[in-house]
Length: 386
Ligand code: C2E
Ligand code: CA
Ligand code: CA
Image (cartoon, rainbow, N blue to C red; front, side, top):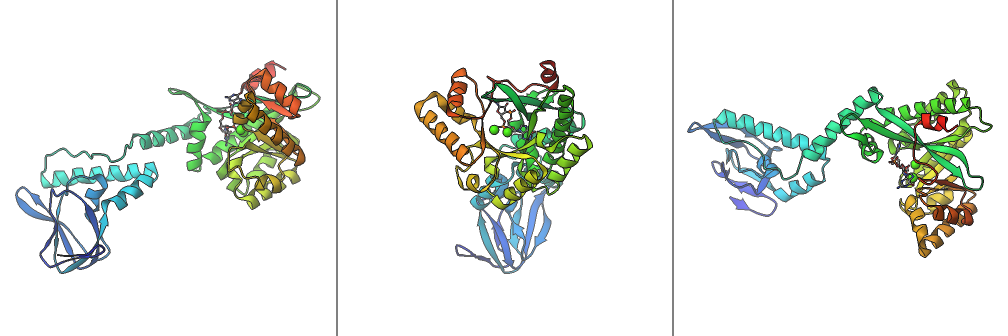
C-alpha cells in the first residue's frame, strides 16, 4: 500500500481492512475494484463488489462498531480516505430525525448481515448520539397532527389594557394544546416543532378561523367598540403568499371589519426587510395593523424599526421585568421615547406588578399586557366577564 494524506494506493489482492478491525477511516474509491467479504460458517462469502465513486467502510465509522466485513483490492486501486471525524461532525450537525433514521437503518442492516453470516453476537449499536429525543419529536409531531384533527388545540385570549383608561382594548390569541396524557403542552414547545414541518400552516389557519369566530361572539356582546384580537404569525406563514387573502376572506364571510384583526411578527423574523415591508403594506391596505413582537430580543438592530411601518411595538417581558432596577427603568424610558418618535404605540408585555404598571404609565407607555392585567383565558370566561 502506498499512503499519502489524500490518496492511498492498494495493489490487486491487498487487504484494505479486515473484519473485526477497529474503524478509523472510510474510503471513497477513485479507481479500481474492491471485494467486500465476510466469513459465514467458516467459509468466505462475498457481500458485494464496489467500483469507482462508491463509499467503502462507512458503516463502521458511522456507528463506531468493529468492521463487519473484509475489503480486498480486486485490481490496483486508488482510494481517498475519509476520517471518521468528518462524518462525526456532520452527523452531530444533522437534523436529529434524519440522524435517527440513518442509525435505525444501520442497525437493521447489521442485524440482517449478522443473521446472514450466522453471527449470533447481538447487534445493537453503541449510539454516538442519543436518538430518543428525535423519536420523541417524531411521536409528538404525529400527535400534534392528530390533535389538530381532533380539536384538541384551544385558543385563549389574554387581555391588553389601555393604560390611560384602564379599559381592555383588545386581546392576544395564544394557542394551547390539551394533550390527553401530557396535559397542557406549551406553545413554545410545539410551535417550533410545527414550524420545522409545514404543519404550522393548518395550525395557523385553525387559529385564524377560531379568532374570527371569537370576534363574531364578542360583537354579539354589543359593546360600543369591538376589541381587537392580535394573532401571532410564524416564519412559514410569512412565506405564504396567500396568507393575507385568507385572513380577509375569513373576515369577509363573517362581515367583520378588518381593523379588529391584528398581526404580530416577532423581531427575529424581521431580517428579510423587503418581504416584511410588503406584508405590512398589504395589511395596511386592507385596514389591519401590525405589531413588532418581542422587541429587544432579536438582533437588536434598529434598522428594521426605522424603515418598517409597524403600528405597535411590543416590549419583551424581560424589559418589563428590568423596570425593577434603575438601569432597566432608564432603558425602557428611552424605548418609550423612541416608539413615540416613530409614531408607534407601545405595548409592554409581562406586566406582573402594580409598580411596573405605574412606571409604564408615568413614562407614557400606551398598553399593558401581563398577569397583573389578566392571564390568558378562554372565550367563555371573557364573555362571562362581559
Ligand atoms: P408571545 O407572543 O411573546 O406571547 C406572550 C407569552 O407570554 C405567552 O406565553 C403568555 O402566556 C406569556 N405571558 C403573558 N403575560 C405574562 C406575564 O405577566 N408573565 C409571564 N411570565 N408570562 C406572561 P405562551 O402563551 O406560552 O406563548 C408562548 C409563545 O408561543 C408566544 O410568545 C408566541 O411566540 C407563541 N405562540 C402562541 N400562540 C401562537 C399561535 O397561535 N401562533 C404562533 N405562530 N405562535 C404562537
Ligand atoms: Ca405575541
Ligand atoms: Ca411577545
